[in-house]
Image (cartoon, rainbow over all chains, first blue to last red; front, side):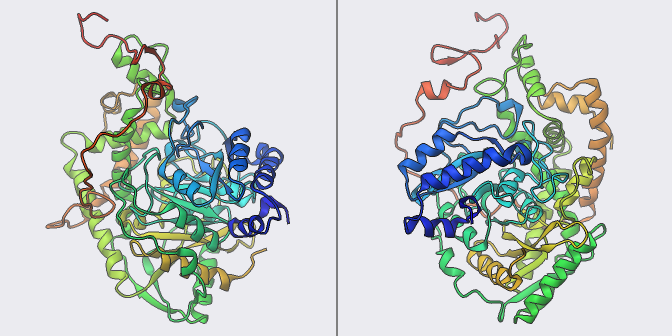
Length: 471
Length: 96
């Protein structure tokens, strides 16, 4: 087995036994990057010198690929946007500090949809990322670079972010494990904001156990992020020991199965996952999430509204692109932003500004926040009857480049991941199988209540064990 | 629903080309039409959810702490003069 094929657990074992050092591991990733990145395009940039320097200073540390919207001192942080080309981070995000103190170093910056807006990474303003399982298909998004790096063995593990499904959908497309933590579980300080009431950082890994280890390093209270409570972080790696489906009440929501446009192979793989769990002793419980059909609409009001406010900071004044055509301060704003942002970001800024504008606020944003309450109540009620929900992660396997041209059609890809994001609960994507015809990976989603990551990881691990090897 | 895309973009401080306007117009109208689905939901007496979880104020002692040094904060500036960001004149008639 090559070093770049290792996951976190195996890498740590090898480091502990002295079989190799962090420098060997980092060098193996760098060599792999040189061999494969031209084809896959997972990374936007890779500062080899800094990665090796970090490895020399931390000889037992495991290198982690970082989505290009998380600040690491001295590294670019472009959010895959032309508006931030050339930007160099002046400080470390809290998740980066937390990783350091738990034996991880950052190595390489991975591609994404511009400002995390998209479901295919086709909205990156700086590069193309291809699905390592079929180069004619997208890796998903917005954490498409992270997923392609993990799925294509261009890293040991990666950090992604999830606002409406941006960790889980690409994890499903690229055969990796992805965890969207509960809102507030992981600090967002130093992570470029898209939609502040939804954004979370999470691990994207080669196994559930790796995800448990990395999430344990990322999670916890941060005085720089007021949404992170002081609740202690459970030992997630210990929580998954002896994980079993026996006696687990697994919720099945009909709203996640009776869906138009769901790929029959996705349906088959999800139903097979359910029956495997049942055979292993899980009790399948029928539940209902009646407001599911409104979740997409709520999300595409709330997320653009928050984005339009968050992205106001990119104005050509303090950092980022400044238009050479600007004649006064007004045109400095309008032209710098026009030249710097790509089409999807512009669409969402306009959409967000529209729903917040005078006369429309109550009908759109105000109402969406109320429907969000109802969606959250649906989950609370469902979790009164079951321990975890099992559903498809995305309605289709990875699609081809330019296959989804219309923005609204692309948005519908996040159908199964958006409701849980709105409710602030935690969810995972776990590889479940491959389509028979196209041989593309498909993940299933588990959802648990807020701050129940230990349970989520345990159920995910039990499923991973049942599923067995996919190769 | 007819959206004045040019006007909304101006509110957002975003200059659009005529081509962008004609592409975005039907796309945005389509999205707005879709999200109007939420008008069907009975929200009588429902509290709005303002954030991802119930928030409590996160207070800390009001003490002075070091922040980014001016040089660090200015390192990414597109234009600067001394310790300040350089901008075109903002107030009419003022000395720039």
